[in-house]
Amino acid sequence: MRIFVTGAAGFIGSQYVRDLLAGAYPAYADADVTVYDKLTYAGNLANLASVQDNPHYTFVQGDICDPIALDAALPGHDVLINFAAETHVDRSITGAADFAVTNFLGAQQIFDAALRHRVGRVVHVSTDEVYGSIPEGSWREDHILEPNSPYSAAKAGADLLARAYARTYGLNVSVTRCSNNYGPFHFPEKVIPLFVTNLIDGKSVPLYGDGLNVRDWLFVADHCRGIQLVAEKGNAGEFYNIGGGRELSNKELTQQLLDATGRDWSAVTYVEDRLGHDRRYSVDYSKTAELGYAPQVTFEEGLALTVDWYRNNRAWWEPLKARAALA
Image (cartoon, rainbow, N blue to C red):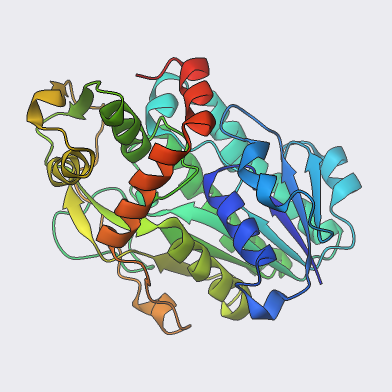
């Protein structure tokens, strides 16, 4: 079996590849894995250093928007999993074009290439942000899409394309929609790695608005287990929520991070809220649970592991923060 994984030099995709090659997914035992990644600012081959000498691993630098490059790399693969995306909401607010191109048009190129080369199974990795904001309860997969940022709007468009390719062309594609991920190798522009690295360096952290926006937190390895279940058992043209089952306000999350790093609220600076900031996310993942999914890592366990990883891997994140001017 040959697996083609786009965007796998990033945070979530690299976790999936490391786990796959470590034998975490018996159905894909001894599979050959091709990582296809453009290596933008968030793509980092250091994320894959532990598997770079594995005989089942191949890396190809390429852009999902480039059909010629896809045609050169994709033939002969049995499964395609698309992690490739621009993902940072703040960046989408200041520059939406890259998000529309990569997240929507790039997905369309992926689906077309999968058809051309008769890839038998495709999973497109999306986000719960396509649903918008929910004041109470949890989204099921048939909830209306109400994206509120350029990032989530582009992802919602790709979700609809996936459905259309399944219905129109018979592409065997499923879509996963995850809640907020955290864990090791997370690029330090996102809230948990940014806060952790700032706090352990004695710096302050910026908290948006009143800090009461709520997110459901999902450990990255649990997310990848859910993706694998959908790859093995999901139905074409259908959507699958993957959640962590732990909702926290940003203020509650900040308190956890302060406690984990031995800091107090004097390290927190309230800043102007993000434009169009969604108030609350919450997914009902009972449909994915029917495939055998359940989170295995509690938030407390995952956060402790994550904080320890950043403490012990300064050589990984310091250059990234310096290059991106993050503080």
